[in-house]
Image (cartoon, rainbow, N blue to C red; front, top):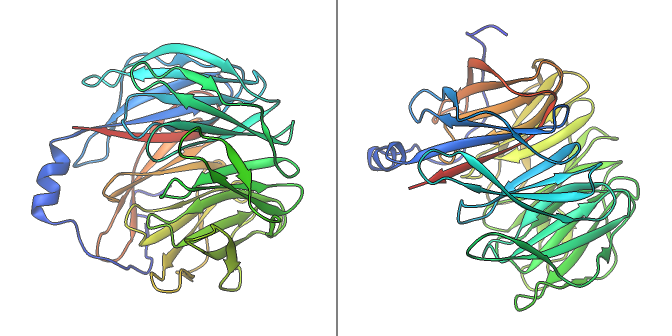
Length: 355
């Protein structure tokens, strides 16, 4: 891809001020990449001004076919869902170097596909794609060990993606074969899930579900119908209501992300090597198309966005690389910076920022 490539999108929100930049540059930022082909996690330090990735130690082993990677809110413990290993691996992060240390692993259901961590850092939830259910675990606050909570709760057919409301009250699961979203309440005292009403209709083969930072809207990216649907969230019940026509995307959606300030949304289209980019209407939640999807490289799979939104990282499943882009804070334009070698078939990423 040409280094001069720039992509302009609609912007909502302000720039990062000088005080924010000073605070941001004083922090260590790391990105962790799950490589499904080599069964490893690669770790890198992100340069706060240039976005350059520098390897942090050698890759560390996961279970068989890692598919999802999330870090707890304290920034201490990453968790990885291993699809064929039917397990969840836990790690600790060294606060200075960012190096990972393997902890213990726990058994999941069949085909753990997606992980979500409750905002208070007390519970972990895992969507098991083969056994069609959700496993729940409590997190030990000191050493990060996971302990199963009760028995797995039924989901729809082929649960693909799980997300939690910022309030920590509700959990949402996108079910790829039943074409709907299951909703649950989370018991804050014991982490148990309770289903809320009937599942809400989605498009064909929902692949990813994301909640905006304020908890007003949910977005469901559908890989079968190649579109994104927007829903409003009832703060009292957690139920969803479609609020706008679906927004077309590229072919074979794999992942969807919203930047930390809810200004821009990105869709990685695995099948046609493209990234669809949108503005976000803060009042109504609808996505605003900024133009046709742009050509990307070698099957983009996961998207990660720097904490202040000034860099976007895209893992490329077939080329085994991670592309780095800078974001124009005034316009949202993306400018290609570099490619960094990852492991085989990078499929998931998470960014960790520590003081």
